[in-house]
Image (cartoon, rainbow, N blue to C red; front, top):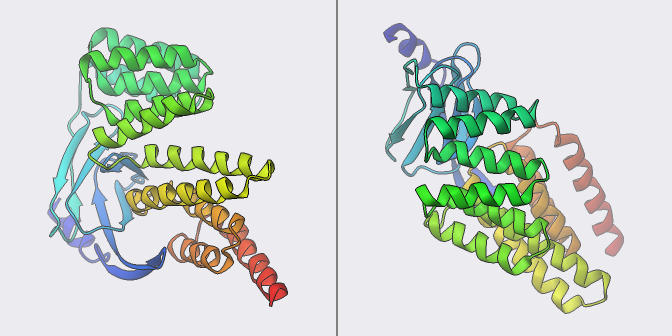
Length: 309
């Protein structure tokens, strides 16, 4: 481990640079972590990716504040590690093998969730039977049921979870999405706002859900000629998307938020602002698969701006 740390310290373990997001200068903090190969890494419960075969993952976050790092690898006990605001350099986090049957069954469910949802649902249920009150298993079960078009079953899973964890921000965010997809906007907004409150203001999934809800309201208002409500709802959508983007703090899912914000600004004919957002996307995620499409958005908007002059 000492030899590894010496090498790691030579790989430019942390650096900072200035970027412009939504017109504000933000410092980018680059953190390199070392753990087991293929370890999933979250920062403040936002997924940033997996370590490689060498166990190394370098992530960029837009904050120098204190953070919580969470690590999970198949066959190992999941752990959470706090990192202070002043933390610099490498972060090495060795994991310990687990023989907890419920945790291993939960890990199996997570693996299956992307390939065999029915089998994943069964595995989540087995993990819960082995460990009643297993919060993460309930969350996984609710997501899997929702993605399997079983909204009622997902809501039951959330209800059961709340018996063990009455205030769970992630569960409320999932509920909000289910309510929104079911067309119950009032309950969706209530669930998203409850999620934000339970997360003490931090819940990018809930803010994104609210943004999408208001974006859809704006589109409906615009199609019916109600331009006043179209503008008001686009403004509300943009506000919530911006908060979600800030909280995602450079995570891979932030790529979607950049494009949603850009789209809303385009709909509002705020072309210069949309271009600024797209350009920031390209600076921050130059290797993204979406980069060529985003560059084409910029080119088209510049042409539209020239035609307006």
